[in-house]
Image (cartoon, rainbow, N blue to C red; front, side, top):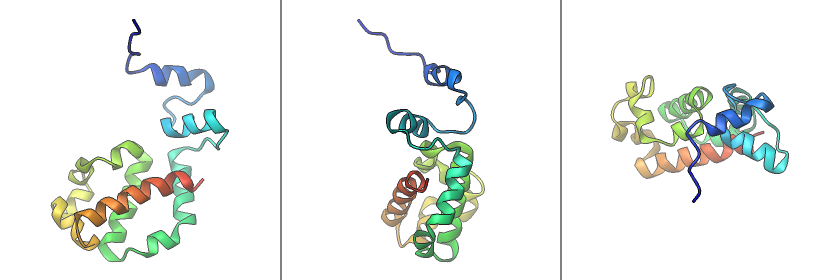
Length: 128
């Protein structure tokens, strides 16, 4: 019978390559190992996203644009998994925009906010 690996197995397995705990995401490491994609820190990936996705960012005005940019900042610190969680909108500075419903208003609703976050996630990994 196979045993499940412990929770830190990923981080320890990456240590010999010098990738553990240095703000590179699991997704980046797996893409690098599987297809020789560039291994970028979240900071570099966020900068590449901001440089190469002005068309995406230009679709959002005012508060919606501010929220997207704050999500990019949260990605830099916490990673891709965290910006996908609805709880991210309860954390400062995003929580300063109000409830989730209030945050969704500049996007014309919660469904459009979810679509914007989903597209943001895809574009963050396509930007490199």
